[in-house]
Length: 214
Image 1 (tube, one colour):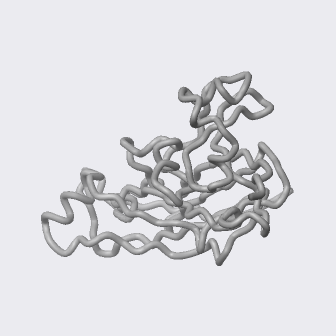
Image 2 (cartoon, one colour):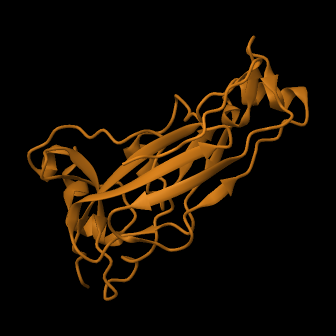
């Protein structure tokens, strides 16, 4: 397969790939703030043999929690790692087909070009956009959208942007809807691009099991 891509080169300007904040929430912490589906860090589950290995409290290991659709329950996947558990979409189970917002934290400095000495260039700011993909389930709305730039109207805001203290929250369309069939390989990929050829991406994962009918 042969392809062509554009590479940008400048004499006095540096462009860095979009970045996710270092102090981002873990996947489990993100799920604890419903209705979230993704955090700003790649998925890395701990090793397990059974579901109880993933849930320190016995009360958290019930499938009924997943049927509610909005709790941070973990389950053990077939490849031996703990993954967030979500109920399969079932029209007979209220709430099971509700979408999960794909929440992403992006460092606001991702919109800035810099000089060779690291001085931020605020005019112009870069244009960024997000593309989201999946291998199971569905998007409720268009998962491809432009991202709003940060406020750099004065020195205070500019310093926040440069220090990455300010982050931009974004998401993919109207959210991700779980598939109707069980799987422990449900994945969502979030890709951030800029207009200078920069790119960053994340992979999110969920176990989907049948909901409990009332």
